[in-house]
Length: 188
Length: 133
Length: 87
Image (tube, rainbow over all chains, first blue to last red):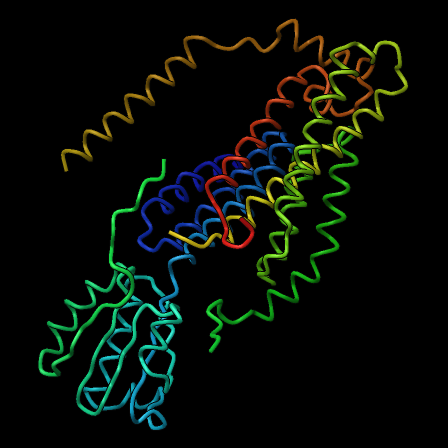
């Protein structure tokens, strides 16, 4: 009976891990799969293999996958404005359409499983570009909005489409910074 | 201007890792040293030791492991793994010194455990701090 | 849709093939070597855990090459994952 339950849950967990839309959930299902697998080894009286499976399958592999996912997950946005002191999280949530589109960008990131990290800063754009920490810089001068996207980031193109479609009336200017894409030189 | 992009540190995870730390060490040492009598052995114990460094990596992501030093140490341990059984098992020394059989097992378990622990730790740290595309 | 059906049929065929092999050629559980290991490992190696006796004495080649595989994979990893600063 125990064996049957473990075997059926093994198949179910494997299917869940494959069919999950969100990658982090799939990794967690894979960790549980490894744990059930190690219980099954213990049931078949192979404690050596059970220890190795529990440690490597549930511990090391899960954390390596989560590290790999985090590698591309954080999306850094800088927001600079002339009226820097008046802009807060609150104005972005409740404010006018000019401020509200930042919220839209954040939602866009959530849908892509990215984690937007918004930084308010009074620094000029050039300095922000030079730090190389940001994937997206939003500059607001009164009514004029300029969005600077990092060339190395692959989501900027999609974001550009979204802004053009939804916020046509705002006349958002979109520019790119960063190095030009070039063919990598092959050193023999 | 320095901005912390690693995210906020979780208090719960830090404290629980601190509580679990000695237990992980004791469990790993037990598995390695008692591998010839109870289930376990060098590989399993080494993997548990590697999870110790992994837990430390989660709480405190600092790249302070000297990779080349531990890599050289791992190579030396592999030489020991190659030499000691070569003398003791393959050359047939075990048939003349029956009393050394159990110390040989314990010694080999320790060496294999250290080698696996260093190897997996290098993997984790290299992977965790790799910057690039 | 047709792709899913094809994959399903292929997987079922493979499953049947594996099941056929398993039933047509049952593995003998009592060979001479395993019986010898089970009855003599305590005197031969001094270990009370049969698994340790096998992977540290009877099948030492296996362990040596397993350690070699781990070492080679780490060398390859150090070669491909270069971290800035540490070189």
